[in-house]
Length: 269
Length: 241
Image 1 (tube, chains in turn blue, yellow):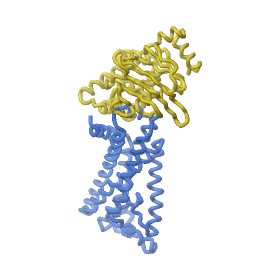
Image 2 (image 1 turned 180 degrees about the vertical axis):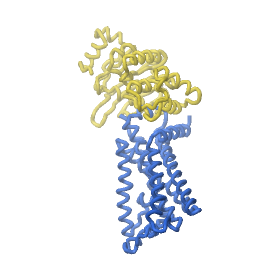
Image 3 (image 1 turned 90 degrees about the horizontal axis):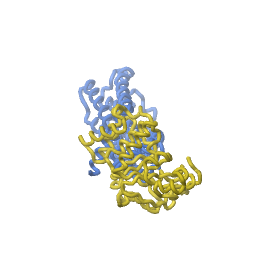
Image 4 (image 1 turned 60 degrees about the vertical axis):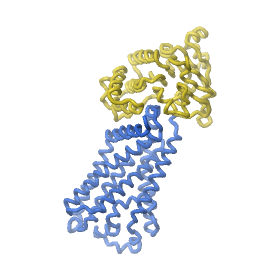
C-alpha cells in the first residue's frame, strides 16, 4: 500500500471527524450570522441604504469568510497536540504509517474543512451581491483566492503551536493570541508609522477585503471623515496582492515544515 | 523455533532517570510471555519501544527480524497492540474507528466489513457498533481495543495491562480470547495481575529498575519459589503493587 493511498485514508477519516464534531457547524453558524448582520445593519444604520459601490459592499461582506478562516484554528489546534493529550496516539501511531503522512493528511483534512466554510461564505456573498446589485465583481474571486491562502497560512501557524503544545486548548489560545494580539499590534504600529507590514500575517490577511476597496474608502463609505486622522490614514495604502500573498506564504510553508519536524521528534511516553 | 521478538541491550533514560538498564530478552514464535514487575519497573517503556512510540537511548529491538527503529512501518505491520488505557476518537463509532485502522493496514471492502463484524462480535460489542464512543465505559473501550488489536490478524500481540477496567465476565472472556489467539500468535503481555498471567502465559519475564531479574517458565518458577506470587515477591524485593 503506497503512502499516497494512506494519505487519502487519513484525509478521509480526519475530515469525517470534523464533520461529526459540532465546531464545524458552530463556525458555519457564526459566519452565516455575521453575513446576515452585515446585510441587515448596513442599510439600517447607513443613510441611503446599501452603499452605491458594489465593491464597498463586497468588502464589508468579506468579514464572514475572514471569520470562517478561524475554523482553521479550531480544526488544527488539536490535530497534533490532541493525539498526545487524549492518548489516541497510542492506537493511531502503532499503525504502519509514516508520521509525516499522518500529519500531512491531518493538515489537508483541516484545510478542506476550512475551505468548505470559506466557499460557503463566498456563495452567500455572491447571492447577496447578485440580489442587491445584479453583479459580482471579478475582484471577489481574487479575494476568494487570498482567503484560501490565508486559511492555509493560519492552519500552518496553528499546526506549529499544536506541535509544540502539550494540550489542544493551549495551541488554540496561543494561535488566537498570536494572530489577533501580537500580529494585530505589530500591524497597527507598522502601518500607522508608514512602515511596510506585508510580512505580518494579519496584515497580509486583510488583503482579503482590501483587494476590493482600500481601508480609506471603506471608512469613508461609512460616513467617517478620514481627514481628521491626518497623516496616519494616508499610510493605510492598499497592499500589493503579490506582497500580501508572499506575506502569507512565509507563514504557510515554514510553519508547516517546522510543525512536521517538531512532531517527528516528539515521543508518546 | 525462531525468535519473534528480540530485545538487545535496551537502555532508556527519561532525562536523568534510568528506565531500562541494558535489557535483553528473546521471545520465541507463538510463545505467550508475561512481562511482570512493580510500577516503574520499565514494562510500559519496553512495550512502547517495541511499538516505535518512543526511541531507546541505546540498544535494538526486532519484530519478526525487522529492526523497529530502522523500519518502523514494516515492523508495526506485524503487530496488534494495546498500550496503556486505550482512547479512541470519541465522536466516531467503533465501526468508524475500526474502519480507519483497518484501512491503514491495507484492509478494505467486504473483507474489512466482515472482519469488523467478527471482531466486534468476538468482544461482545455488537449492540454498540454504531454508537459514538463518547458514551462508552472504560471496560467497553478496553473490549474495543482488543477488537482493534485482532482486526488485521497480526502474528504478534503486544498488550500492556489489557484487562484493566474489565468486569469479571469481561475478564473471563478476555482470557478466553487471548488464550485462543495465543495458540496461533506470539503474545507479549505486561500485567500486574498474577492470576491472569498464570492462566494465559507459559513463561514470565520479571523486571525491576529496568533490569531483567528472571525469564523462566511458570512451572520452573513455582518449583523454585513455591508459587508465582512468591517468586515475584522475592525477586522484586516484596514491592508488590
